[in-house]
Length: 86
Image (tube, rainbow, N blue to C red; front, side, top):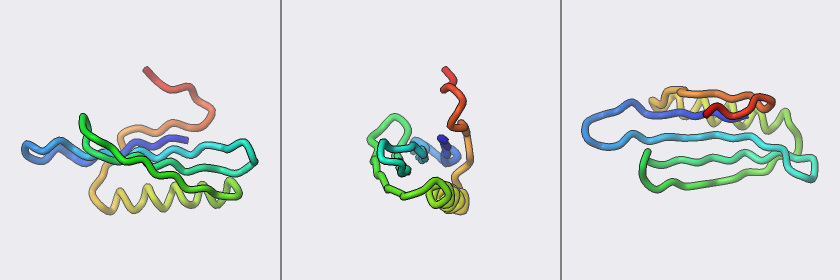
């Protein structure tokens, strides 16, 4: 699962983005990958491990909701079983 959120353009500053990705790991757990930064600039990558899928889904939903409250808008979603769009 992949979610892309972006702040609306305000003035001359480039908008910020947050990308949340949920990926299964090789040991049966799940990894939540958070990438955030300015579009066209530097970004930060953070990961968190979860033991099972329900707790990982709960974590990505909480992270999404927090960003929506901060003014980000959901730009794109991608389910785990769909290929990435060009």
